[in-house]
Image (spheres, rainbow, N blue to C red):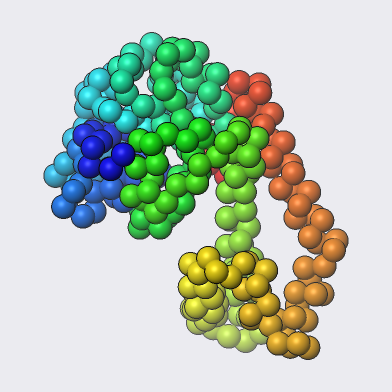
Length: 274
């Protein structure tokens, strides 16, 4: 289904991810869809409505639901019951939930058994239309939406979807790794701002290779090594069997947290993804 066949996108819960979705959809005036936003997160909702001519803020969540063909749920997990209980979703609408840890069963409990629901994991890169979004189960309207924002990864089962959700928990660790390198460089005598600038440029240059699907991640790592060189030395001494096992154990723990939250019917923590 072409994206232009989707007349209106509604979003309930306007935070960081919802804002990124709106920006990705509406930055180009040509072909920008109509978007209706809930008043929750009023400052950001109003800012987006002023910025983009096809965006408006509704009086309440029910008005959003009644106005949208695709209804994106982006409330905090701990606010889902209060925000969604009693909401009436039109039968021909698709609900796309980006609420971390809240399973289909719980969403159907809140919205009704007949509502079509998919879960998705959009990341901030959708703002630049550069984020691949995992979707479970596949649905043509969800694919049309997220293909416009960078691409869609259709996921067949809930366990695989949970594994991808767990993988998003590695982002701050990756950035913390870069921050550690910059701090070490500063301690070695480089000005702090210059150390950060250098490390940023170092890895920004490498990031371009990630867009080339013909090279696996393992092959990209090899591409940046010389036998006996500095890159090989650090990889072999630091990313050794013990540290790889520790990383995998950490990922297993994230997966356990995600799946336990879903099976219990309530998400853990503060409600923020990651």
